[in-house]
Structures are given as structure tokens and as C-alpha cells.
Length: 77
Image (cartoon, rainbow, N blue to C red; front, side):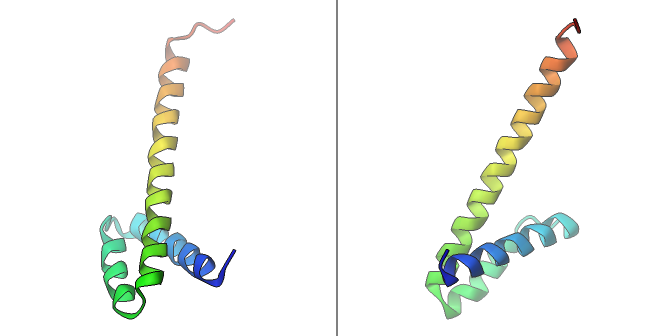
């Protein structure tokens, strides 16, 4: 993993935690704007990391709902 990827990933992880704690689900946009002023390359890597994390979260939420629905309607053996 390159330095760029490491930095973007760590920042993405920290921003996701802060978004969860504060409830500010647009915080990543503010962070992106600030880092983009200094490094467009880091901004793009950061946004890619955030998009992947948000997509993964949505996928897991869907999976959890489907499994819960299935388990609530399935008769145990």
C-alpha cells in the first residue's frame, strides 16, 4: 500500500468514526474540500476511500435486514 493509500485510508477511517459520533454525515465533504486545496491527489484517494466505506456499510445493512427478515419467517427445525 502506498503512502497515499495509507493516508487516505486512515483519514477515511477517522472521518467515518467522527461522522458516526457526531451525526454529521456530510463531514467528509468538508474534510475533502480542505485537503483538496492542498492536494487534489489526496482528495481523490480520500473520497474513493469514503465512498467504498459508505457502500460497504450500506451493503452490510441490507444483508443484516434480509437475514433478520428470513430468520423471523423461517420455522426452526
